[in-house]
Image (cartoon, rainbow, N blue to C red):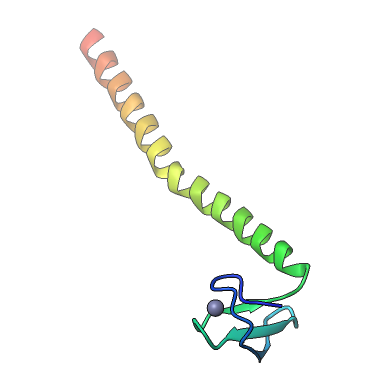
Length: 81
Ligand SMILES: [Zn+2]
């Protein structure tokens, strides 16, 4: 058992996280982490969240370009008329 960051084995138990998993604190670098298979699930969850957030970040651009596109279409339409 060692710190995933600095590989130190100077770890202390540091309570439980939101999912009731034992948390450890590295006394060497101060990193908190969970030594548990569920750790992967958590990071998967974070990845999903990041994907969702990333997707939402893209939305304004899509909306913006659509809006510009329709505005251009309107301008073209008014020019034609
Ligand atoms: Zn460490």
